[in-house]
Image 1 (cartoon, rainbow over the protein chains, first blue to last red):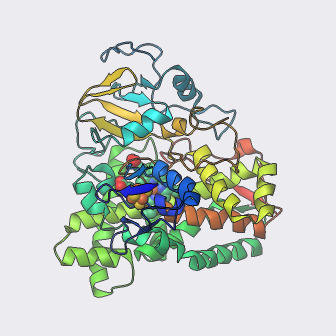
Image 2 (image 1 turned 60 degrees about the horizontal axis):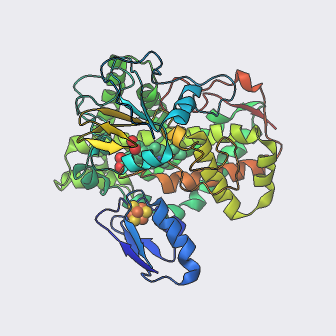
Length: 64
Length: 410
Ligand code: HEM
Ligand code: SF4
């Protein structure tokens, strides 16, 4: 699975970090999301799907 | 799917008035007229006090779609923006970026996102735990019954947000009184305008003081941005008022109303109290947020272009009320939605809104609620309501739902 994050859309809600904190983090200056791991292992897939589903601005896209 | 064309001028006799009232049966359930409207259609119309007839969005999927649609505006200065009551005149956009659109919304919001990011909030846990323990020590040492709102639910988030923003807690009577006037229904526009004016004036003075006596807090940062010319003094003051109101009222109401909901569901309460499983604590807070949806006045928006949705056309210039209390009870999104089930996965709820305005303070609110409920139940395992539930004064007259008082004993 490949994760694509659109930082221009991000509103720093922190939802993705709460859902999958080994895949997403927030940058120190303004809380905008950053990707820690763009190709998560299969056992992380459920959390990453959850993160994409709760992102309020649909900034997280998944490709298989 | 319904494809009836809606006449925008003549209200149908069956059209509900907004805001709607709850019935006396279950104080946690949304208004029955709203639930009935949801069963009928994803979109309908409601009648407002001024005769206007905004769209009323009842279902979860349409709510999320509209709240994340750039053709939907939160800018209150648009003519036709739905207002549940007469508004104070001439105050422009009185609550900063919550009532603005991008790019201005994003520019201002990004100035205050850093202190609310998950890792910074998580680092505050020990300090918040201490505030909670001190308040509960004091309550337990005092007389029974006690009012949980005054002893705990209100001071706890107020102390936390005061520290984070850099507001002297000794001013809390002043800002609590004025923010209550702003979120209460039925307060005259003059009184609301005066309350807003008082808060704005207070913020101007406080921000000026922050330059002379800086601290490690959000208002010092805002004052420096004004000083550097990145932010106007007026924008900074409005942003300050928004953070101050949003930061304590909501969490306070969730603590008190959530505690009452737990007391009314004793088997669920016992499971949360006795489990010690952090995953249950997390899911319990999300479920209480969903089940109670305290921001029960709907998200108010206006269409800035025609939008086709669910077989209807929302025309540019029409007001839209997105009833997230109903969305959180939509059976398509949550199985058996009227049951409080602390173990369910409710993380996709819309209690913090959706789209670019989704709650900035949600990591803080989550952390505060997780600590508040668990500490309360652990330290007072015999906690009980000290009055029949029909004697509890509910905030049916406020845009944020909750209870005015919660007499408890142990
Ligand atoms: C349980 C507690 C809380 C609830 C239920 C809640 C709910 C909400 C909701 C529904 C919105 C969206 C408004 C809209 O779309 O029109 C919102 C926005 C906001 N909330 Fe919260 N909130 C809570 C706690 C907090 C806290 C602790 C803060 C801290 C300062 C805060 C600050 C804000 C701000 C600044 C916005 C505006 C965001 C924007 O427009 O971009 N909230 N909140
Ligand atoms: S969930 Fe979306 S908006 Fe929130 S921090 Fe992550 S990417 Fe940004």
